[in-house]
Image 1 (cartoon, rainbow, N blue to C red):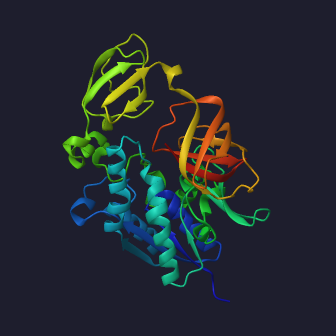
Image 2: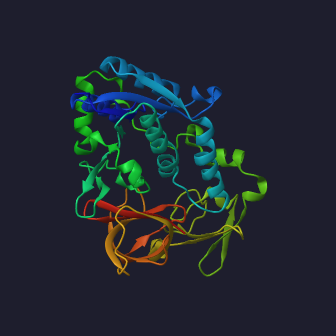
Length: 360
């Protein structure tokens, strides 16, 4: 019997390297692919821990050679710029705080993986995300579940995947803790077992977001202006609303004798409003472009679930009211700190993702 074949996204990091080993151990025929998203003149300038630097590609190729599986680098520089980087820049231009990893998953990584799988007549696609993809018999849908390691799990960034992708997806490391994955990598003598994980935006050099935005945005899009409190008193000036985000504490260069937070940003007027922690708390929000992994019943006008408004934030009890096929209103049982336009709100039933949308 011919082995089932899987196309695996390999960043050169520890998770995708061990995913390749686990898939092969489970009897799959594995093809490793790494995405090249930058032009040649920039590739060598990115940190080794970045997920698609020259060194990362070399590390992925080395793992594939050690495991005896083929490896390919896929050039998606133009698509990445148009769909991820341009979206990122345009979001800041509109006063939003984007999440490029989710957009990359939705627009680049998973669609290209599936395309490659079909080109190679493979049965599945896979990544090193700490989450699980399973078939839900009750709803007759493929769903995303939280990974075993709650500190590292990544279900939040996978909410926008469609059924075509989920029905072909394997997430090999989702049933393992990060420590166990590193232990396997160390035993196999993968160089990545001790590599520091990157929390940076991969295309922002030196993690200097302000410098990146100054270079990419036109002067008219930067919008310098005043910083004021909720009563309207002017407390200072700022160089541009695009350099700040709701909930931010540092970098305001204003002394109020107590911790202060950005509670609102009026991009059109160039105004930033600050307050104390309680002023950041919101009990309701609206979101758009909702993706239902488990669609509600037509008769359901209110869903009770848990919601997460940031990647590493704890889930909170919430009710979800669909306003249209693509928009919803969310009401939390307890106010949440700084829900931020441009970020995602992801909804759970237990450990299962049921939907996700973009905060407006």
